[in-house]
Amino acid sequence: MSVSNAGTAILGAGIFAKEAHLPALQALGSLAPKLKAVYSRSEKSARELAAEATALLNTIPDVYFDGNPSSNLDALLARSDISSVIIVLPITQQPSIVLKALAAGKHVLSEKPIAGDVASGAKLIAQYEAQYKHLGLVWRVAENFEVEPGHTAAGRAIAAGKIGKVTFFSSRTVNFIDQDSKWYKTPWRTIPDYQGGFLLDGGVHSVAALRVILPSAMTHLSGFASLNKEWLAPQDTINTIIKNADGSHGIYELSFAAPSPSRSGAGGGLVITGTDGWLQVQQIMARDLIHNVEQPTFRITIKSATRDANGVLGPEKEEVIDEPIRGVELEQASFFAALEGKDDGLGSPLGALKDVAVIEAALKSGGELIDLEKLISQS
Image (tube, rainbow, N blue to C red; front, side):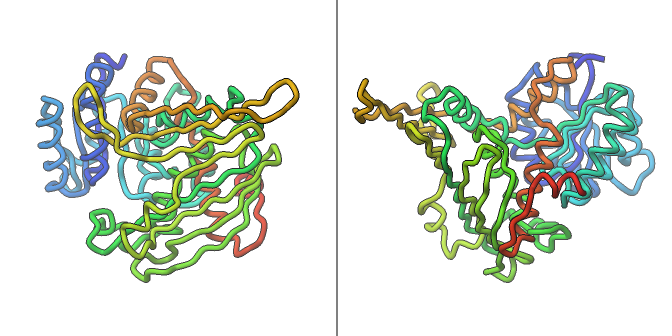
């Protein structure tokens, strides 16, 4: 059944399902299958998501929830007119639901992180590859930072040699989260049953950006983790150094413990330095001249050194690329294209597992050097 006449369903009715996945389906229009059903553990939240879907997508999805055998998740997965599901559930619940959907013959796009830890993620990949991949079932992990046009543009610029050979890098992200935040008020984030709390849930984004932009795989890490705001337990800050396979190295820092919102904008962002220049990726608000509105954008600034025939440093060349943030839309588009046999390799579960490995290593290092490849292979 092709995307054009099959349906999809959203499993999970939280903030990201409403604020990211529904608008992405709207943006894709006819490139996405019809949303035929939504599921949540509670009837109330499922109906709220369905109502928002009706308003945005001009369709009325069927509502499924726990407690009634005729309208629970099993009933949804039994439908032959639904070929794929988008899973947007709490982190530790997702692996079992991924397997449940695959067992029902559905293609799966599951939100990042792939699992709560490396061992669980590795086990999930092994089960998929042994039991479902050969059946033609597609499973992708939705990591929107992997497909952001700004990040892929930065990666292409480095691959094209615009800053020479990468020598070192820095990735610094500091977020302000207080107890009134809509993200903190999500029950499964308030009392996390997975390592790292916000560091895992949000940290895989910035790791994925590095994975896409850097030309060489991250192989070793050493660092420290700490808790600075008690309500963000178990940890809220990590500071690490990372070595890559090509010998380059850099700093990866992430915190959700900013003392005030102003700290978030001080000294953050991603900078890659090479032998012949450097590149910076920053998130800004930029005006869309077509629609005359401000929109979140990744700005890539490339500074390339020039030298004359004698090797004397000349004027610096600057190139600026602005790419609107639209990763969720593009990760969905990639997934639905894969269902039609057009696999671009994005959303790889193994790539998502590598992102979790960096966070797990940072949480556990305590200053010791951790081999990231061994962490994965021995899980």
